[in-house]
Image (cartoon, rainbow, N blue to C red; front, side, top):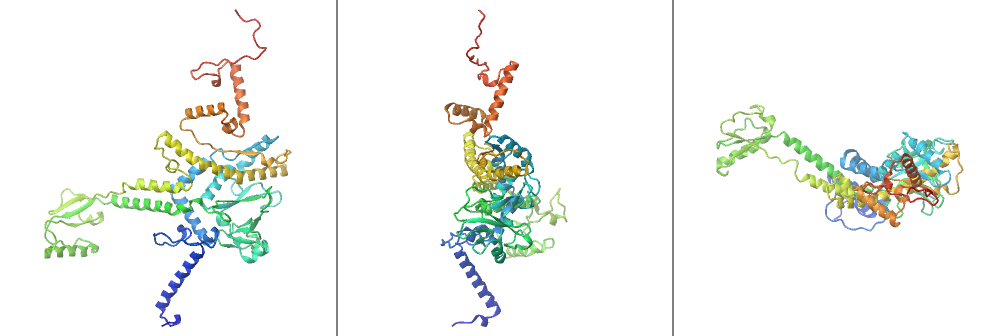
Length: 539
């Protein structure tokens, strides 16, 4: 027998509507490739999830609404979680550090350009708050790790008009979104498509992003009164000189928006924070509990001084004593907090007759909690390729084990450095120097392809045992397995010239240079050049 929906009672209609809505959500999940990202999905059974056929790309799985929620969770972990903050700190100081972003120009006249970039431009690179270029690189690392993507714009007049300010303006992930359809067709074109602020041409090639600061957090922007800007480029240009770049962490082909590499650890980081908070709260409560008063009397316990919440339990216990169901010799226990002991005081010289005091063994915080939290933190940090040595900031293993962990971490750090160099540094070096020449701040003639002759300095891993490292480096140099340029950086020639000058200074002052001494301290005699022999040697 079929029943029409309108013939159902209101309560029945609500039940049916909820079931239909649940089925619709399930179909949407099926269309989007299953459950997607657990951190922003409704809690489900912990049983193994069924497999689905994905009918959309990664941008469809993580919709604009879910992306906003995921960004908030990731930023909350950064704001409130010391574990997440520690991971970010290690990433910043090891990938960028104090040396990251120092430019060397390997072409005639490049010393002047590099000096202007490092000393004049870099200290005031930020458009909004005069940020140093080194800090901009650190913020890019943090933005990719936390949000997944960001856009950088060089103001060559694009923002302020004219010749511009020559500074860098950043747009975070929630300042990038799609335009409404009417504005998109008018501003971009009907033959283009957009996905969460990323624009593709008719061939499906990435060709721009839509940014807006005043409409931050919205899923759709409007271009009215210039509230949103379209950053565009030629997707097939080899010699790219665009005044903007889009930095994104992508894990799939044809993916538009970036996704934080920590997305798989968001739930774990949240659990760490909650577990630690709960354990701390229980420790605070238990620190205020001293013990319990136990009655040895076999007669009925009165409920005059017992709180209402415990009277039912006390009455039930008295009933068991009365009908003999309680075991002989069992003590009847009534627990009190310090507030409930105010009538008789918190300190006793002598307990009342028939009463005894027993200390509570709270065992809080849990003695196994620290090891468990360490394991969780290590798991979360491993999603960024960081071993426990960097995640916990504790060197507990042997030299060989610590060195092995450093090698594991620096494989990741060096990859991130190279990615920064290819995307941000090479781009900003080209933009800044070209702008300086155009505005007259630099009066040099740049050779062809000068922008391909830029190199950058980055931090290197610190040595645990410098003696072993020096010995290994000396052998590598002797056997031709490395070069001074690799060891000293792009400006190695300046270092060698400085070293040669020091040798002459030591010789002039009659002092032995350490490089011309043996390990025992004996001076190594230098062979004389031809024609410098003493014509009248002493006999």
